[in-house]
Image (cartoon, rainbow, N blue to C red; front, side):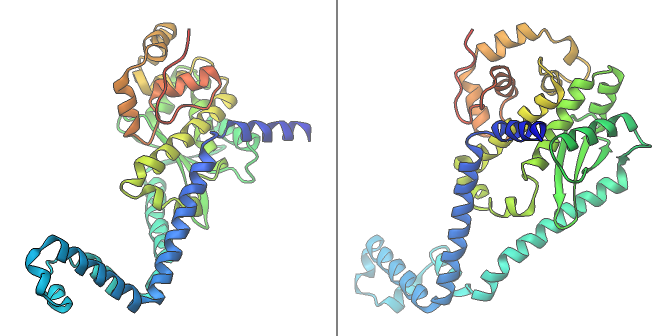
Length: 324
């Protein structure tokens, strides 16, 4: 019981401190936007008249010749771009608004179902009789994280790419995928720590519910253009930091070789001089590195390594680096 409590505490503390605030913010905005649009759809005529009044007033301010025109004449003379908002309001329908979340869920099911089907069709499922040593690691870590059911794990040919991911088919099951080059190198090098880190990281996404349909539905506004740089991408980066911590805890990979594999490649990562790497990429930061990080949904690898080394919650926007 005490051991279970300790693991629960570790999992809770490993989650990035800003993940839940960002998630609750985007969830609130998503629900609020849905409710506002739904309310407007029930008062369509009033909304349409209000929108037309604003459009007419803006047109009169921008066109001197419109001073003597009636509202109807102005509306008839609007360009297609100027009528865009009015067109949206005219097409709004309460039934369509209510069905929008169902449509989005069906889209998720289709996309992930197609992905799952492709993985099963073209990949290899890991199990007790198929790469049994890998399955043993996967199942043991899943149990350690308190997952009630061990997610399926598949090997997929990445054609040289180094990647792994986890997702969930709504109403069916969670599953993970590891690209073949990662697994091949880890097994050839007898590098269990790096393999554990990568697989543990993906299990972290399952444990934190990042792969669930409701988590992704509530993040719709955060992923909208404009909002994605303010909410969506920082939220995504916070998720990666938290899963890194779980992967490090499960693997005891103190040199972060699992992340160095992503930086230097599958053949050279074990030859990287860790101290020289830290001096150049962790202690000595680049301003342009922060720019690159801002436009990515994953934190920079050196930021991730720095966060693990200092046992801190990684920076989402700006990081001065690790102090010597």
